[in-house]
Amino acid sequence: MSGSRAGSEVKVGSRQRLQMKVNEYKENQNITCVSLRPVQTAVLGKTPKVYLVPFSLSNYKPGQFKPPKSLLDKDFNNEVACKKTEIRKTCKRILTPRMEGTSSKAESTLQKSSLDVYTESNKRQYNSTSDTVIVSVDMESSHDLDSDEDTTPGLDEFSGLSPYERKRLKNISENANFFASLQLSESAARLREMIKKRQPPESKRKKPKKKENGTGCRRSMRLLKVDPSGVSLPAPPAQPTVIVDENPLLPPGPLEMTPENQDDDSELFKRFLQTWTEVSKTSIKNTEKELVNSKSYKANLSGMVITEDTVHKVTRGAIFSVALHPSEIRTLVAAGAKSGQVGLWDLTHQSKEDGVYVFQPHTQPVSCLYFSPANPAHILSLSYDGTLRCGDFSRAIFEEVYRDERSSFSSFDFLGEDASNLIVGHWNGNISLVDRRTPGTSYEKLINSSSSKIRTVHVHPVHRQYFITAGLRDIHIYDTRYLNPRKSQPLISLTEHTKSIASAYFSPLTGNRVVTTCADCKLRIFDSSCISSEIPLLTTIRHNTITGRWLTRFQAVWDPKQEDCVIVGSMAHPRRVEIFHESGQQVHSFFGGESLVSVCSINTMHPTRYILAGGNSSGKVHVFMN
Image 1 (cartoon, rainbow, N blue to C red):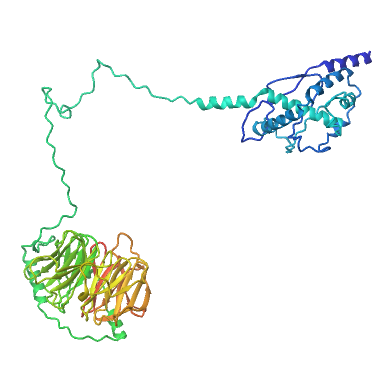
Image 2 (image 1 turned 45 degrees about the vertical axis):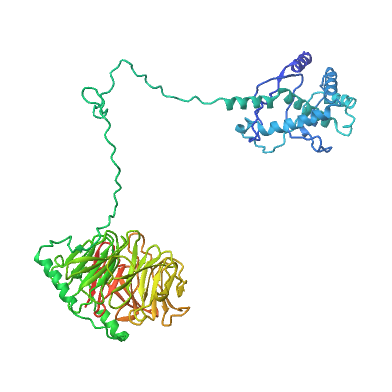
């Protein structure tokens, strides 16, 4: 009974239908995975175990792959003989003369599918990371199959292969033909086209329909330009657009000295003008001055101090120019502001508010301010607005000396000691020669220089036919006797500067030195004792000249009493004003403590007294004095 029962169980097991899971093909070229999702079943008579491997018939070598020992060691004695005919038919159908073409096609299809299909086996986290998958079939009748495959026609070229390897190649071909019959690539192409054509629906908000008979919102009849009776009003006449100039020019001609911060009818202002007139009558003799020795000079500088009484806001806005009156009796300071104001401050007055008077002779920054060397009762101011005016304290007016509305002025200087001839620099690179003795407010000669811009102009103190100009990155020295109106070539050009230049000045007594201020954080001193084809560079002083956008640029100037010393502002903390010797050594630093908490960009020294005046970018004037 037990034997018959076991035989019946074997027969039932041989007849049992097993399902082989077929991979659903998804073409995705970016994923090299295999999916084992069941979508189709095939009925087989045996129990197969499937292992997939990329295989190429063209690169095949005998004995390249060996089957697992578990497959070779199994007992095949119970194989049913009736399956021999099925295997023969299967081999005849597969291994035909078309096997080579079919194998190549199957090979490419199988390799492509293995690279483009997702696998669910990634979720199961197999312990084996090998990319080789072996296709093999565990047949119960391998013994009978071996004998049959040896006699199968079409396997002559594989006669050197073992029966197991032949069976494995057959299974590879069957799988390749099966995948090719599915036509998965065509289906994937159709799916891609469908995805491209399909677009997400746009969610459009439905606009509410307006009610034809509904009452709308009430609107102003004035806005509808309709009178109460319903008649349309006529269109108003078009008014011409007026372009308002931000900085309109003041009317030509003389302007009255009307203070903006004081009452012009007060007795105090009249006494103020009278004081300036009387002080200016004191003649200053131009005697030859000798340099003071360094010890006494340093001692005098050390005695200069600043207090709260010597600090006051004189103008509105940043200060662009400062001048000290040459009086030996009173201390009078003038400051030119960015707003076009000119402020006058008498420090000898007891009350600071009563000693300051502010005037508006210009509408744009006052970049240059000098007291006349011939008549100290006159103060000349030059502005970006294209005007040059002379303030006369005796007549209480600002007389117009030179006017050019089409140009913008940058700097000026006196060509003669009588202050009758002036040289004016323009921002566009032109140079004007002005004679105050001729009627009118025009120039005598207009020269086109070789510079694209001119920032400062300064005349040689001894040989007044020479003057120096500071441009963007070049410094030129000209001779007024050889100026050409079309284009004048300079006698000497200094090309040592690498960035923008702020100023260039001759030494005040002999003119044997030239000091320049450049944005490359260097002060340069040249030897101009012999004006020839070249001017040698003597000293380069490292100094921070980067003031930024909101501060007035530094301009190093000479001390009129000591022409071998240079005065310049400083960005260092605590705030200070520094003096350097032409050799590069620092002579003195003016510290003010709580009285000096800002940067004094523009500084000047009194021609005979030890008084230093500096202006900052908020309109304050700081005065150091004994």
